[in-house]
Length: 460
Image 1 (cartoon, helix red, strand yellow):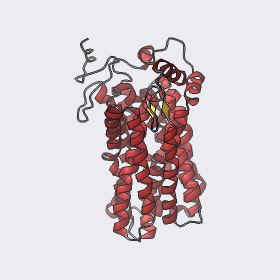
Image 2: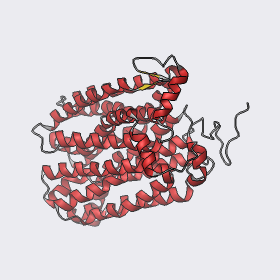
Image 3: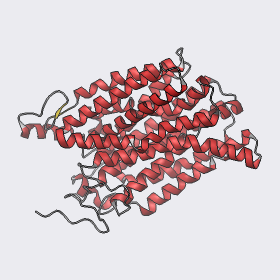
Image 4: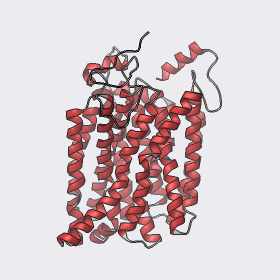
């Protein structure tokens, strides 16, 4: 049979579901590539906003008289807010579509970003960081949107690039916020304790603009928006409700394992974003702008590292099937854990920077590899599985921050090494993931293919 024609205004080849089978990163053709650019840019603004506080912590700490415990509790609070919002975002995407879900969340959290300029006590600082964490649930909509637009042969790459480029917001903000702060002090003669408050107008405005762009120019599915295309793409005729969608996803054990795995790749990345600037500032006695520049290099690696993870997943899947995707994830994340252990043991500034850069590439690639597996876990509850996995990332960040970076008896360098050991251990359960029709890391597919497919659909 001839391939299906592309949807209106699309220049990309598509499969039978009108999902793109090619990924052309520099194209803005409707609807596939335009959705991609809107998705990563919207999430980019959320990462930029959420992590706009850490590079200014030395100044904020002095202004609000924050203790190390206050700073640690604020970091945990930001992750806790993200946990619940990510878990809820999955069913919301299943019910309303990624476009409405993403834009609504960005518009609701933008005033919170602006309210950062009004904090006056440690308690209000912790509350603001908790509320800011909700915006990171946009990640679930981002990955859901890409899985709805791109076919299985390129979905790992699409997910990896969309999330990787978005995560650069956490790196760029480490550069931009100290830069804007210095501009206000040097050229406008604004006092330091006022300057850091004024610049939060920038991330708040950026977040509103990207949300409006998603609403105006975005499209949920290749051929239509969500309400019209729901039956076609989910292949269900019965009326859906939130509890049914949620339960179907929660009973799939593969989603829980991927949530744990993601907790110790992306969760570790989030924790590092929170502590790395202050770590270099305190341990190696560098100035605020240099510490921000070093920290930015960690986040900016997402330009290529997470997309590389998606490419590896797709290549391994093409050659070795699902077993290749799982093996690739395990190897890359284990190497990331080893580099994290080494980072805490290096005593020189330049040695730490080199190891940190290698660590950033592998830990971010592992996140891309994780979401190269997620679209295959459940087609009918894709949003829930994405939400579970995304929430796992922030749960891992909370646990790591609480145990190792919130008034811990360990030094920061020892805590970083222990974080690497936790990564290695929590990657091992990947060996337990098994798809009857595709196999797992340690065994092949079921001999009874018909029964295997039936068993898979019971969990789908």
